[in-house]
Image (cartoon, rainbow, N blue to C red; front, side, top):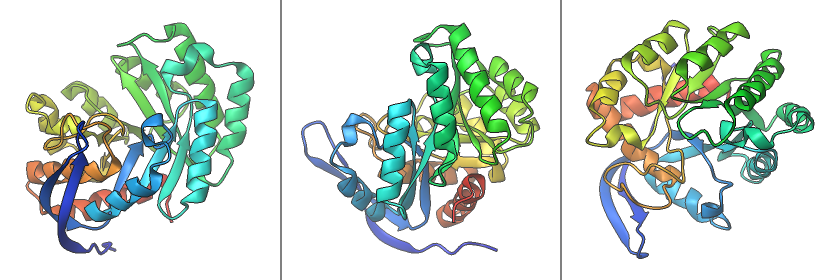
Length: 287
C-alpha cells in the first residue's frame, strides 16, 4: 500500500555562520525521515524544539538520532522518550570510541538495546581513514556488538570508511547476510555498492551526494535498487547543496538531499519521498 504524502509550498532555510537566514523556496512534501542524525551532540544543546520546528517546515516528520558512546546512547534514549512521536533512538559504539570501550560498557550497551525506544543498533563498524582508535580494538568492539546483536531482531547501522571488505567479512561471519543492515553515509566505489547489494543490505546517502565532485557516487545512487535506499543528514555534519557550508547541518536539510536524488533518478519528488519513507519505516520497524 502506498503511503500518502502531503505537498505544500514553504521555505527550507539555514542559519549561516553570521546568524542570517538564507531561504530556498521548495515545494515541500511531507513524510521525509532523516534516517541518521546526532541530535545529542553539543551543536543542538537546548535547541531540539527549534530543530524539530524547522523539520516540520521542510517536510521532515521524524528523525533517527544516533548514540555513539554509552553516555551518548543514554542521552539519545532520553530524547526519544521526550519526543516520542518525532525522534527515535539508535545506539552503539562508533569505531572512533573503541579505545575507550570496556567489556563492562559493552554489557551495559547490550542492556540498553533491549529498551523498546531503541529501534536499531549502531552506528558500529570500522574506520581506517582517521585511525582514531587502534584497528584491533575497533574489530574487537565491532565483533562484540555483532555477537550481541545477532540474537536480537533489530537492524544494524554500519560505519565503514576505507574498511568495506573487513566490515562485510565480519558481518557475513556473524550471520548478517540478508538481514536488516544499512551502510550509512555511503561514499564507496561501484564494487563496494555491488557487494552490499548482493547481500540484501541498504545504503543511505547524505548531503555528499549533492556535491559537484561526487559524480561517481551519483552514478551509484542513480542505479542502486530503490527499495534499498534511505536518506540522511548525519547532522551536525555534511550540509548539502544549496546550504553547503552551513553549520550545524540540521535534519531539515535532508529535504535537499532527497530532492537531488529524486531528480538524479528521474522520479517525481513526492514519489521518491513516499518510497524512501516506506523503506525507512520498514527498516527500523517504526510504527
